Length: 571
Image 1 (spheres, helix red, strand yellow):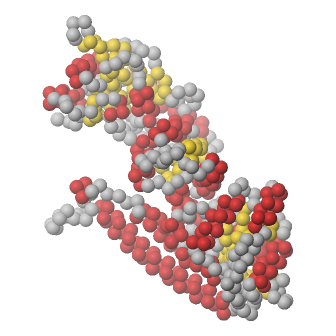
Image 2: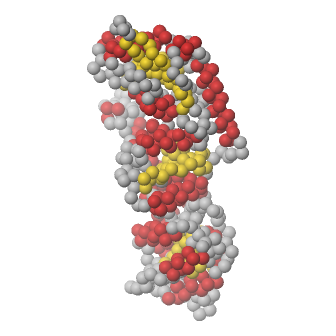
Image 3: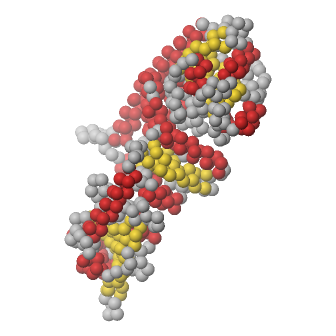
């Protein structure tokens, strides 16, 4: 007896057998449903007092039988033809109550991209028999529709549906869907279209919108195209899906009309949350950490960066491997052994841990090499100025200008992953001027994933040996103080000793009132690396900072200063 799904508790074996026998029924492929099949469904529905649901494929075969409402039937994610935007299944549902299609019916139709959905009324006749009432037919609306996500026909008789050609209607809908996609593809690139999802749960609208704007930058840097954005305000986070089911339905509708197949969340999702959201929306789901890891992977140049990025990715994956319990083990061996053998999950974990161990060994080797390089610099008594700051603040552009170098500088997040060190000259350092070394470093970001911070420890170690940290701030972006605070927290977490000095970059694009406020707040220099304005004043201030710390080309002091303009105490 084939399985009957849904609300089957309390049903007699006779009813279960009759329901299972519905799998043997077949309708002509072009017929929505036959009256004979509908009557068989209606008779069982009246006897058990519950609706009966069938899923029929395009060959007229019954592939699923369920009891209850439309959403009680498990619907395969892919059953249609290759390239089809519809599921390849139509749902037939017996209704015990009048009133047409329910919200659950229409939601099931849309979320599962059904070919069609038909519900028919089941009535009791005067002599105690069964009568078939009106039938209600619906299909999803094309993405170009400005009204509902579905089109509902006027109520009709089952005999009319039996005579009509449902495959013709399905083909017509698919042609419209194809035209809509082709029209959108004209002139567009191969970038993946994404819907960005933000959540505000007490931090305030400005902060939430700032995070969403940053997520947009991240997604673009990763190569995605923004098809839409959505921000939900919730007092409490849904532990299962992060946001509410109603909002998820809105996102599915938005993705459908904007031809997007990716949801990107501004919070880190647990493995369970990601699975629930993907299962409900049938869309690809990424969180902020995954996008950052993707950017790092794309920008990794050279063995050092590639090793650290791979280590980050594997650490992230390891925390997200989950099993189904010993009774549901996916066996990877066990023949001729004492026990079930090693599960597929255990094999995955073992392989990842083995690879992580090898990469960590390589990272340790990189750390030793960099440590030796720093010792050689120390023997040369050359002061080191490390450029730090939020990603895309213009560090690499400023680095190129002050060191007369040509390091990669792009208007994208995390363009620099591998530290680069070049010589420069500060005319006011010491009595006659002196040579210095500038180091361009990887950019920071708020809530930097632990996987990245741990993996890039060899790179971040460069900051400990610097004599001055030049904190580059994008003065043209709203919320600059928040980004300053985010960088400060990371620097504090790294327990860095060198003094820090802020420079406000991109002055040519910033509001001058904002520049004045930021300069007063931080006691900072103001430059435009793009136009080279303010560079002489910056170099003079850098020399002053080093001179005050006792750092010059022939010796170093042990003084430690906080930001100029903030705390000025020394050890």
